Amino acid sequence: MALIEGRALPVFRMIRWWTFFLLPLLPLLLIIRSGFDNDLGADPAKYIVDYMGTWALNMLWITLAVTPLRHLFGWVWIIKFRRMMGLYALFYVVLHILSFATFLVGWRIDILLRELTERPYIIAGFSAFLLLLPLGITSTKKMMRRLGARWKMIHQLIYPVSLLVMLHFFWQIRASFYEQLLYALILAWMLGYRLYLKKQR
Image (cartoon, rainbow, N blue to C red):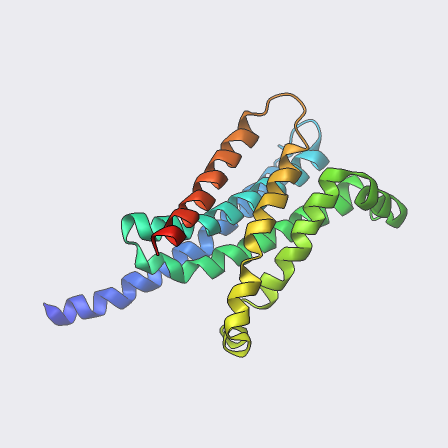
């Protein structure tokens, strides 16, 4: 019986790893299918850009949720997937930017430069991307060992990144603000919980 349980545990861990690896790809597969089905709404270009941005935001929030979930529910195992979720956040951010440059700007350099210097919400979003890049570059175990204590300092950038992303999102409010408010409340709770843990320590 113990032998069976011993074999079952690695299999369960492998299934769990593949589940966490594949699930974040589902939104991408769904929008690809919607494209083939010609089901991207009245303005497909804007829909794709917004969709990628939403999933970049979702992945970033999931990454930030790992610490509270680990402490509240004792899910020690979930910490192993934080780096993966962070990389998926960067992946969807890159798709968001590429979609914007391709479908809304048409890779016109003059328009891109004007957007990056004149529109506050784009400046905030692109600044978040630039801060997120070092986190992705230094996400490997080799970089963790090489950077030592500096690695943790670099990865503290996720907090200003999240605030810039929220600013990028808020500056795009046209009518209803409920979606932005919900994301802001979740972020406030996640950051507030971290402050609580820091004070406890």
